[in-house]
Length: 380
Ligand code: PMP
Ligand code: GLN
Image (cartoon, rainbow, N blue to C red):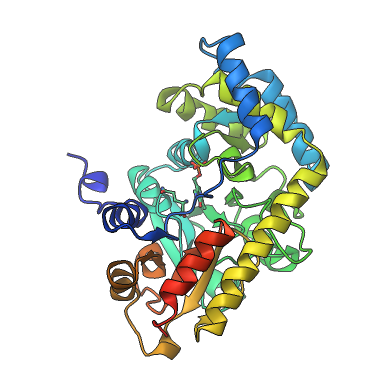
């Protein structure tokens, strides 16, 4: 058996969702909205299944979707992408990450990553033979710091993987902080993989800044997106990879033997959805911001210390002021005794984890958030 995968524990998302189901708890753990998602986008998928072509779509993705992706990022992020040579459709951002990391890392290459890190990154880097160099970002701000970058970037560094906005800390890296990373990438001739699946879910008037837009980064960034996140349809698993054509060709080489392609009905619906007016994306942000404030205000009123949430549909609480120093034990008690599932942020570390932060998903109805708050009333 392959030791990279054979000895991995079950992901924390599966464990917590399982416990929530078995115990009848309110699931604020694994990140997914509890509403059915935009009806017009779902209807488009249904029509495409019934009336459309359900045979293998092209390996790179339906031309209509690749054009819609290029147009979407031109409109929302001022990026200029050639839909024919710089855009590929994958089966979720997860497959995009797998194809990117497996194709761009050669054995022995050093790969810089930042913790807290999304759980898929490390196994994929290791499977490719990469040598991870992990920077633990420091709470509560989780900023990229010059000294920490200088300690890991070197001549052996080939790749850096950044998630912006950052799951689980709900941090949004702005242009100035990204410029620091861009300087290290250009100085050491490093390719950046930027997982931007949360790019549309940013709050308080902030505009997402794609790493690809920074000076020197256009042709050395692989940008990854996810329709599952953009439309709150997490089961759909339609992802995108955007990169200069030499990089994209390499990533496509891996994609053709991972999944080859992605269901055409979903691609058709995503192409339609990406073209929806700006107001629909603004509405989504407004709705999530309202839910964030409802949960955050309710938690604060019940004695919790809530950390800022600038993006994603997660917020974090600091359990240290409550006298707890073990987030995993805290979450276990929370789900078993109080009936609310949450995610311990220590699960997003390889070494020296932060153990006093717990993540909660607020992409839920007001009634669900209020019921969770009722159950959390006697914790703090
Ligand atoms: N990257 C990050 C940071 C995520 O949070 C997620 C899922 N929540 C993914 C990738 C996976 O996205 P997809 O479901 O499109 O595979
Ligand atoms: N990305 C989702 C989260 O952070 C979970 C995805 C999964 O279950 N693998 O909650």
